[in-house]
Image (cartoon, rainbow, N blue to C red; front, side, top):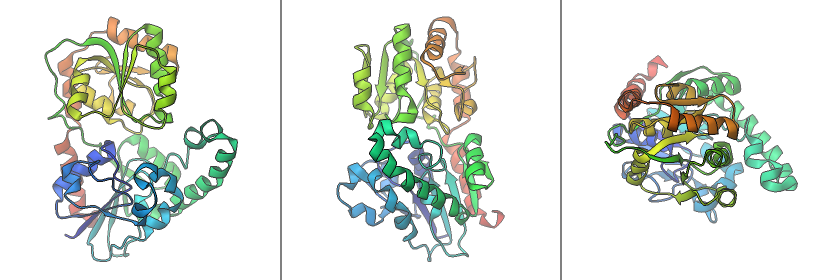
Length: 364
């Protein structure tokens, strides 16, 4: 089978790239397409497929400012040529699902989410408090156009597979398409428990962007006087550092080995935003540590209340503070039970389920 895999852009190893990595392992002869590739930003397994890029790759300062070129992404994704392939698999959170392929070539979309900033999170990314009133006013019709294009091209995939039942609901709502669910992979071989006792601090591992609600984690930890360590980078970092006190550490981007060490040492890992799925909570649970998460979105499918962590009903600092205090000082969690729950989401399971689908396109 001549297989093409399409990903929106390759600029770091987040949840979508970890799913892509497993696909690249299973199909090492596939051809990989992406709008932008920052060399060295993804794993060696992905790099070995020598990603083919679009014209966006050659625009000024693209490695840092690729998101600024969002309006040209629809044109760029539609210019890729898939005539010589027997099957196309897209891994999409923006526009990869909208590739144009011959009618006889089946297209499976592994959908991380419909384009969130074009649909229900415009204000978080492009609202007046982010861009100012003039900038927000300019972006509103652009993103309205993107949303119309996103819906209009939803039929280009023969089958949708969602990363969670929550995302399957978004696909149904915005695309009027049904989707089955295959949970993303968690590297439970790498993320394993250690016998050391947890230390009294909370951990956030996240891109520093608006919808992640890192500000809420900072405020909650301040209320209960629990030190907070934040791993990750993003456009909100400067503002968050101004908000934070001396008991908050910003580590930026660090290695997976360092992150694993923090998961093992932290008393609790926090997920204050509403996630489509959320790999971080499962990585922490694979290390035997509990999670405190906002009880909406993907967390409902990855955290078992009272057994692997705590789900918070309302997105307020007071509610999260109470949950953090309870998880650290009041609750008793069984590290073995937490670990067994995470093992259900392993890499082999994801690879097997996706490979079985790709092998039988006639069933789509």
